[in-house]
Length: 482
Ligand code: F6P
Image (tube, rainbow, N blue to C red; front, side, top):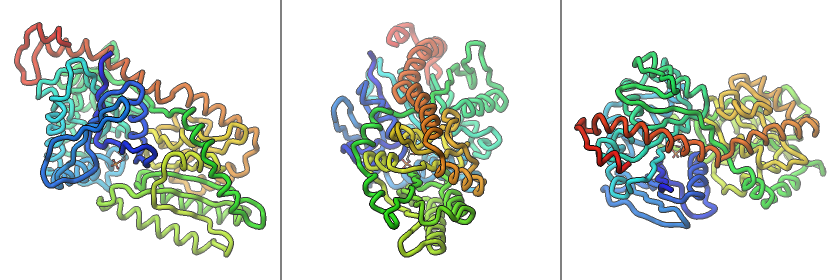
């Protein structure tokens, strides 16, 4: 079988038990563990000068990483990726900025990454590229003559064309995306938004076989909702006895209930709206005073991007306001922890909590929603309260689905969740577990790679018969090499 080469902006830390930042890292690492291969990307550090990539091998994975110069970091990561693409793809035009130099830096780093990867590749490697930082990566590879099959998976939402076109070079950017052989999305909404752009904005064609033709490329698109590994999560959750810590925090011998949320500190996660909803719960349902505690874990993220500094300030001020207003000597309603914990601790915390509150304003999938459910005790499961704007809501419709812009509606859902009888909790849990088991992480990986293998060889032969990346005719020997 061909080797898997995963390319993502950031490569997760390889030390066992270390906290990982975000669903991508968790998903990719677990996906690679089975097949083995290369994980190629940024090591998270800034360096004075570009140096050679470093390889560390653990088990069956080669982690090939490199640093970014301050200029590349500013332009590619902090700038175009996280101050232009991220807000726009999450429908926050108000928070987006565009700077041509940063866009050039984004293109430059994609090209430099492709150049670094090229000497490591074998002819039949299959390349799986992840997320919005690397939209032009396949184009860069093709320009360097790399002919391997290349697939792309977008972990975040794909915006409606009206939003996307706010990015000045949207056309050029989307043209580069069409160099991939297969483009995967989290939900059908994302895929439809992309198809809408391709067919209406650039007059691309949706072919009878479901593939798309645009900018002179024929490629396939598909929906591959990322999942989790429920059995592994169950074990982690069972092994960590967080419950005792919470039970010991009782008032006059009565343990209080716990609502839990775990997110990167990001404005797309709806943290402020969630705090406001919790405040409404305490205002409208005073019976929960001294009977419930909300634990929000939110490690800082992209702390040098201005909009992230603002959201952190807002959150701290809301938590302070709510605690100042409602706290008693023996009860603090919100515990806000601005730090990360290892997965075992988090899964144990999920299992020991009565409600999982996952309410992003917009999210590609949100694996926390699936992890919360998978971590529950089947005999006494907690309740998931989930935003309709998380990709996960399209699958987990037995959660209590809420609109995060409706604070009172969220408060009502929280009240309902806190009072939900065991039978209903079990029935909702079982429904969701069926979905989680069926669309688990292995099927996400296997379905994507199966489709990439099946389609791209045909597509590549087709495009190579016409011309190579530089537009020159190629001979038939190269076809055999595929
Ligand atoms: O899932 C979205 C995502 O941007 C991933 O690409 C990334 O691994 C994660 O969030 C964490 O973001 P960052 O690498 O910017 O800290």
